[in-house]
Figure 1 (cartoon, rainbow, N blue to C red):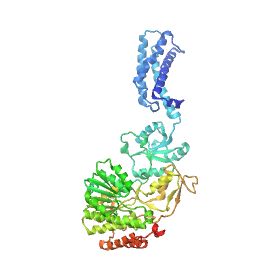
Figure 2: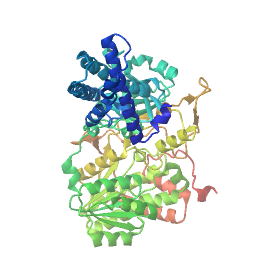
Figure 3: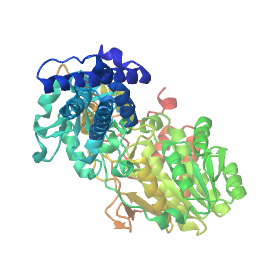
Figure 4: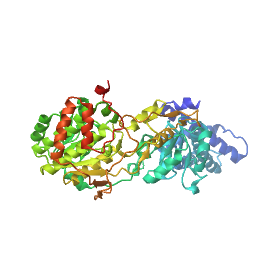
Length: 620
């Protein structure tokens, strides 16, 4: 019956409520006479009209006070005050009409009794309907617990009550004085009883509604919640809900950024603008994850023009389309970093001032299987870009490097270290172009990152594949890394190697477990054979190592930004490097794998290959 009523149109619901109020008004009058006279009363013929036409007085007044414009399921104290005002006016007018009709048999006290009964019945029916719809009736939707009984939690509760998706059943809060209190009819329970409540009520999700807490506090709460296999969602930052209007659509899943949360380091605006504002900027590898984010942030810094240089046509199309709404002149150019002639034409034609060189092959096993092309792209591609920049008089050239360049164990890592050495050697040879390199670890969500892989594996029901239980990695968000790259590049004096402070290293297996638990699932292992997601260890991939480093030595100086350090490391002169590069080029062209590896070790003595030669042209 209730469900049928809920499916009525708004007009039908209003007409139904008008009928109910008409009946209540008549019954209240009959009850008023009966209570005053002391017996069940039915009006005589001369009073029938006065009693049964009472709705003609009441309903227009009720309509005026908007008693039929409020959704019963979401009534508030304001509506009850409107009921009291409307009924008072109706009772007064009815009394005046009744006495003006000069009919006998209407005691004056009936007016007062009618007022009291009408207030109680008109208001009571609405409260009863509200209770049936929100409390007695089993609300459909996910059963959720709100973590945080503060202002944001209360606003969220109000939003949830208007939603069919969620059914809030309890609050939990870190403040023990709130325990056992009720907020909006929802009880605040002891947080230590969360596990029992989840099991008893079959709770689907916990909604984190404490937007103003610090990163450390959020991580502490998530560590507490991950003990329970339950989906966790969170609200956006406090600045985003300052308007006081929270919607259920504002809720989002806890993601890896929340798990690894890093403190905010405020950017130096002067450094951000130094090499970009009102300059012609070019990004190589503009369609990649790092390159695309560079482009997005560069556009905001108001360059004179932005040149997108990319080998992959689809990737170039996508980033150009995303930037097309900006007021900056955007030039999407297809091309390879190994095309020296095209690079020189572009630099000269557009008058390029600043280059961010993000084009590289970065996937460790893939480069291991394609050694010669990895060297050709990462080493000689960087050399081509740099020499063309010097020739065209480009002011600044910033290389996006990697922590895998430090004591490399892979071809990818050693090629990036070679690229650093190439730029350092060129920096000592000339003063036209200022070269600098920025070295950092893994960025969240980049191509080849474990995060999207784990997310997809969890979505597929597992297993999660990890190369080794002891493997650790540094992580940083793409946006933060790029912002720091831009600032570091502006600090360069020539040949600088900058290293980003990546925070604490994280065990990949711990990361995987957190992602499973906060997705509302359990790890499947020997102690939990009925779990949901199994973790499998598949062994290190070609070129992969357990621990990544950011510094080759301890000779490091700090900069004005605590997240950017300047590394002082050994360099090779251009005279020493050039003959090795020439021999390396011959080895690449002839796919001479043994010679190629020998020369890479000659350039980077710290290169300790983790595996034998795995190039597919060599092994097969």
